[in-house]
Image 1 (tube, rainbow, N blue to C red):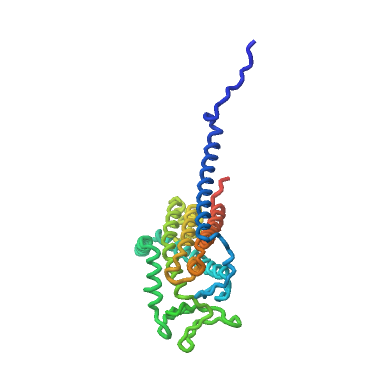
Image 2 (cartoon, helix red, strand yellow):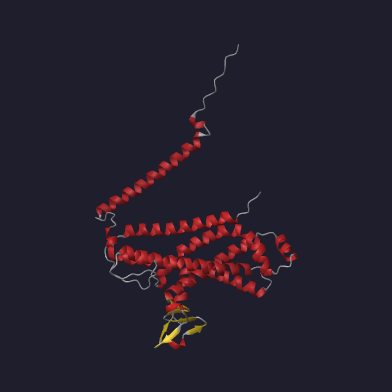
Length: 331
């Protein structure tokens, strides 16, 4: 009678199930040790310099004004309110930039497939020129060459519902009593229900034109990924070029476009920190002024990192949700 065989014991260094877990645990331990070393080194240096982390200065009066603010602010309010005003200005620039860049990029991307050769050439020239010039230089161009060169007073550029002057951009809107009113010149000073500063205008134009060029390429790649048969099917149904793109091609291209848009939207949000180059008081500019007054460099860097990280994670979460909606589900 044969005796039952006991299963052979596998050494841990040959166990294919255990080894991946051990490797991940070792990597995690190394990361924790590096982070602990860096934090310990930071605390030791701050202690030696007498600059331990503290957030009490956030409640002290800021003592400086902000040129333009989306929320009420004056110099008597505390630093945290100044940073909040800077964050609100950043959000305004990012939201307006996302909308403008999406519209411009989508139209430019669709124009790549137009039957008009001149239009295709103009779009290719726009994309190639804008993508190869640093955004910082483009912002300087928009601010100093375009907006600061605008005439003032009666010589300002006047369009229906819009006046472009060196003192700002004046737009028509609902005034007191919900009456529609356009820009008017009163004693040599333009007045309108909605006024945008030239700093905001230069930043917005730079972000929209720069990001729009990249979004145009994302849209072009998405449309090119749609099979040629879909164009032919739309044409056989009697749809024109624009209707074919809008009703047939673009909905299918979204599953390719949205992931690329996510990257461009995050880049736009981060690029908004270049607003300091044109004097727009965004979060980074306000943080820089706060740092100069308080000397709390580490705390300011932590706040900036956290603010931009949360903003980018929110954009990414929204775009990932949109990506799941536009994916084609196979039955």
